[in-house]
Image (cartoon, rainbow over the protein chains, first blue to last red):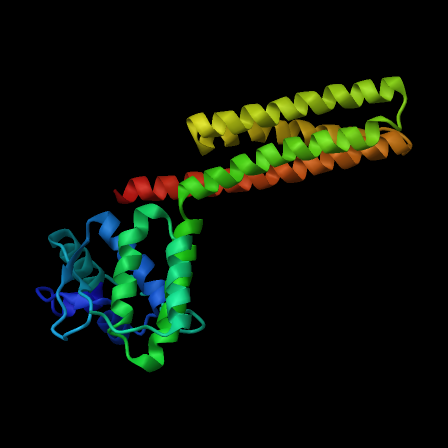
Length: 88
Length: 188
């Protein structure tokens, strides 16, 4: 969420988020699914600028997601280490 | 026109689609589309992550957990019936009657449990299974410690323990399903 908060107005792609957070796809996508279910994330299909490549799914925080992310940012809650480790 | 994918990657993506619950299909379409934008060196890792995400979504699905609990209860009833057939012919008439009565009551309870789970969800399983487990635990203690071991008491004890194992698994699955359902309800 904090990675999405860096540029709240921009749409981010899954791979871009993986690079920025260091979280692997097998962990990141279930998290995105949960955030979307909670109404904290919105997703849309964006046409690819590269010819011959399929559209991409892009994500950004909703107003409630932004509020939650700002709460997390300002609170003292320890953030779990979600580094790659053995995750895929 | 899309680029042709490595067959191994394609197989992993197809596997992820097969594992993923249908209600999450659009997310796996998103992952499959994203794969074409991932650098080639990382594509295999990304595709394996798709399979892992699909497994996580499938295992966390309350429908899957409830179906597993139902299958376990019905499987338990069938196993019980099979054990009855296997052992009933070797026992006295009285021994067989007690075993049969116990067996049919247990099988009936299992089927009621399966039907109640299908109708009312995992909380029904928990409500039904918990007292039966307590009852079976008392029965196991009584049979195990109540007198000198005989072949018949050893058989009863084994069958009670088998029931306890099946019911404990069903209880654990139902508990997990109830937990996921609560979490999802809280999220929505």
